[in-house]
Amino acid sequence: MSAPVEVPLKDAYKLLTHGPTVLVSSAHGDARNVMTAAWNTVLDFDPPKLVVVVDKHTYTRGLIEASGELVVQVPTRDQAALAYALGNESGRDGDKFARHGITTFAGSKVGAPLLEGCHAWLECRVIPEPHNQQTYDLFIVEVTAAWANPAVYRDGRWLDAPEQPGSIHHVAGGAFFEAGGMFSVAGETLG
Amino acid sequence: MSAPVEVPLKDAYKLLTHGPTVLVSSAHGDARNVMTAAWNTVLDFDPPKLVVVVDKHTYTRGLIEASGELVVQVPTRDQAALAYALGNESGRDGDKFARHGITTFAGSKVGAPLLEGCHAWLECRVIPEPHNQQTYDLFIVEVTAAWANPAVYRDGRWLDAPEQPGSIHHVAGGAFFEAGGMFSVAGETLG
Image 1 (cartoon, rainbow over the protein chains, first blue to last red):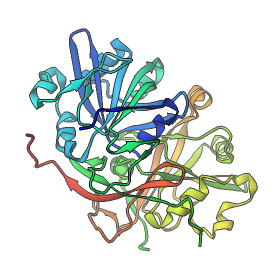
Image 2: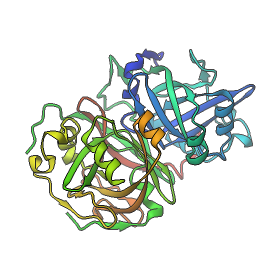
Image 3: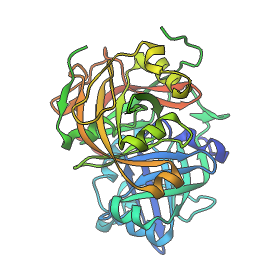
Image 4: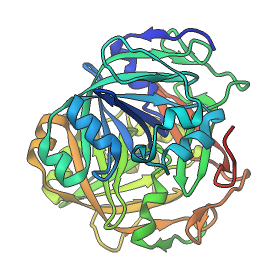
């Protein structure tokens, strides 16, 4: 793949506003993990914030709370089976990166690893909100750096490139919608 | 369209987990409104909860806070231009339903109107969380009833029906991704 290019923080919301299922990586000390999170949303533009739902029984949960950091990445269609597997295994049962042969690279702001081959990456720090975390498994994070594969996103927009694998949108039980064509209605008039 | 069929509350998450842009309707007294919200996510399974981001400058915000209710609906591809318009107008400038010729029907649990022609509808009550609402424009709601168009969702799943308009996923400035094909990886093996 092409080397990731940095996305200005003011544009970070464009990487997630369309609602893709994401991979959440985390690390603390020698421990690391990656899990899948369909339940996420952008929360604010600038500084960009996100909401990510992380169940309190996951291995990731402890790593996030201990480090105060995570990385949200947008997987490709080719990574759908991997995304499903990562969402149905626990890091307590062994290192998922090794099991799946996942290669990573380092971020610029956080210690959690970035997974190669994704569409986009958002390095985040947790904004501590204990009530939300305890009661709802709801984490509010601020994006501190963002990156995208220039083959699918550049100059402030996703490319309308049918040959690219689209983002994936989990429904339930391993069933996903694939992102189809991009279209614009900005010039359309209403009936 | 076919008459909406009720979706069991335990399945309500399946209507939104794939991350569509939604329409949020609200009402209080004689006032009503509908706005577009790309920033939303499922928060829990059962009882089902959602997160919806509603800016404090919107007309909808006051109606939601006064009534404690809202309806989240999943618009179709054919409603994309409408969704974009509803996200760029204010209910303070006149009734959006009348302006766009939107027809509605009544829900079973809330007073806010349900828009005809959508894929799915989730009637919701606000779980009051003043800190989240004030600081982040973040609303946590519980789904009290859910409905779907049986032409696109029935028996606990979205139909894989290419002839149906897909859900829409806003990126920015009137550019959307359309939900493409459904696929399952539950039987796929990893490399």
